[in-house]
Image 1 (cartoon, one colour):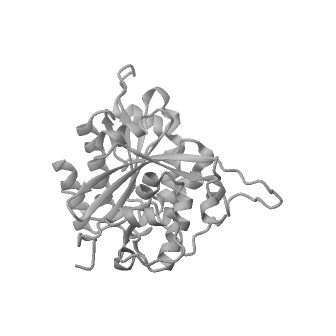
Image 2 (image 1 turned 45 degrees about the horizontal axis):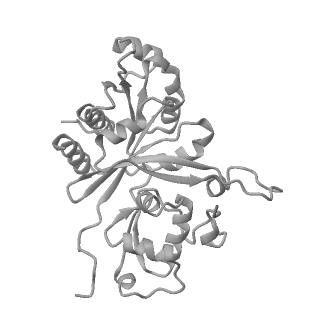
Image 3 (image 1 turned 180 degrees about the vertical axis):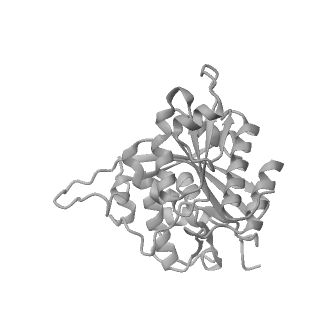
Amino acid sequence: MVRPYAMTGGRVVPASDKFDVVAMVVANRAALSGVGYGLQPEHRAILAYAREPLAVAELASHLDLALGVVRVLLGDLLGQGLIEMYEPQGAGGLPSERVLRAVINGLRAL
Amino acid sequence: MDSGRSERPVPTAIKILVAGGFGAGKTTLVGAVSEIRPLQTEESLTAAGIGTDDLSGVERKSTTTVAMDFGRITIGSEIVLYLFGTPGQDRFWFLWDELALGALGAVVLADTRRLADCFPSIDYFERRGTPFVVAVNCFDDAVTYSEVEVREALDLDGHVPLLLCDARDRESSKAVLIGLVEHVLALSGLRPR
């Protein structure tokens, strides 16, 4: 058994703020041009998945890593300017009426 | 062409929680409406427990993991709904706090054979002020109660919608989600239509 935080060097707190489970991650141009310093295979795997925007929880699931581990790795990538993170609207910040109606209509049309 | 990435805009992510007692049908409901087979993600207590548990003097870290099922519904190119089944056990409520932060609202699934199982979920969302609806999952072998009876048994505020559903059925589960979003719209001071 591999201890889950072995690949983060024992770090359990990401370098930056905590990422929401549905924060959207997307690799940026710098990542795709192959720069990046001291990246581990897990970092590269994240960059590969994040060519299209996807949520932190989806990344964790695809990589079969605990959310906490993925957050640390994302903190590294963010620190190197290789990804963009889009946090969802926080507490108190309801989506607009337009978005809510789009959700209702979208669900009806499913 | 210096970018391998499509220029697809980053969609707005919306989080909806699906709560309820063990066996109430949370994962079933998520699976019925999700466009992907429900995925599982794990949070480990080592990280999440920091700041919650006093671990001073404890040298050995525990690595209990808690699994959460989630599904996804893409709405056009702009919106992605993520549905998270909340971990059932009370001792994992610290995970709920993180999940509930920024959530649009919650569906509390109730099983009329074990109504009391959903009390903690209802209490939790009431205290947090998270909008929620109660969906009674109509199991085949359960006695049917009237809406009034269920409302009384749950001591539910009049404004909280109570819906009947079959969590295995896609249309029925869709209707529950629509009911929740309409409720959120209504609460935000706008009239649903």
